[in-house]
Image 1: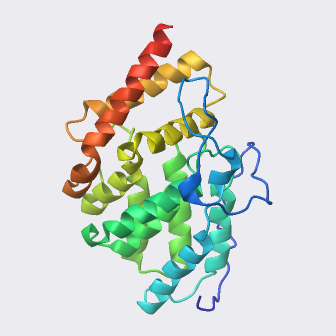
Image 2: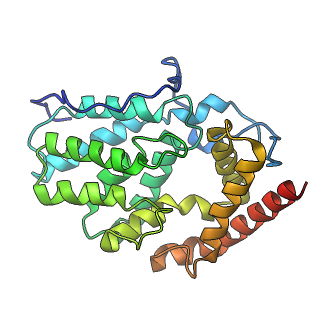
Image 3: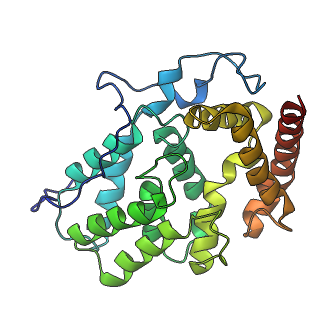
Length: 274
């Protein structure tokens, strides 16, 4: 990684009262992540260590390659890239994150790599992917806004061009799927939203892992209230004429996403009915 010249004294993840992840957590194979075989919401999933998904292998190397690409393109001129990663790592390894962690970011980066040709500003999209869940408190209404502020500070500290700085922040804000507002961010906004929702179209086993992660993130919410709220969210996505905004992701995931969501809503209705 190129040498850095400036630290980020103002770049801080907002403090929370939730417990932090153990510093001893190590990298694991993202392809072999699972959960207990049964949970209170009736989701059947395969078993493997719960802590495994919080810290994905090779994320620092992936970040270093991204930063190298900025320098090679002459876009970044200075900045403490290692410090930025440490701040991201402090958020994505928080103990309360069972899905919105490095596992999720790694999957999103994989999806972006496969669809990179669709991006009009691939650098802005990639940086937005890294930051779009930098701040995540389950149920908080300002996660995306705070994440966008962190992304903007980081982009400015790297001396990225002002237009890219603005686009990065706008793309993070564009991941507010449940805001009820008209989709924003143009073609790249559509792309990052589709990347973020790509988990819907994965295999039933992978989707079950995602659902279990969400359940654990909202474990403090009483069961019935959690079921009702989750049902409303999934039904909202099912009500859309198209879950995915880009033709690429519709062709790749739309049918499987609807099957997964329909299966999950049926399960939730049964739980609510008792």
